[in-house]
Length: 65
Image 1: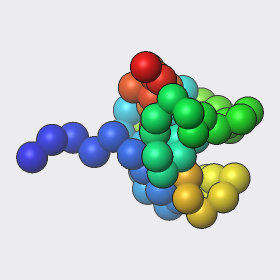
Image 2 (image 1 turned 45 degrees about the vertical axis):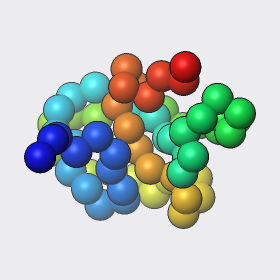
Image 3 (image 1 turned 120 degrees about the horizontal axis):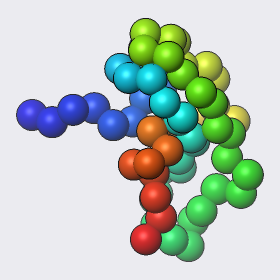
């Protein structure tokens, strides 16, 4: 079982860093325009995303191919 990489509102940040919004389908043709980016400390609670279909992901793991 691997480490969780996507987070929803109310989840706690496992590590400090920059987190960004990602969409449901994370392929190159469905990129999110102007995704929110937040800086979190370990244990901070994730805020609401721009819409219900998005989740938070650590910025360096949210790269688009």
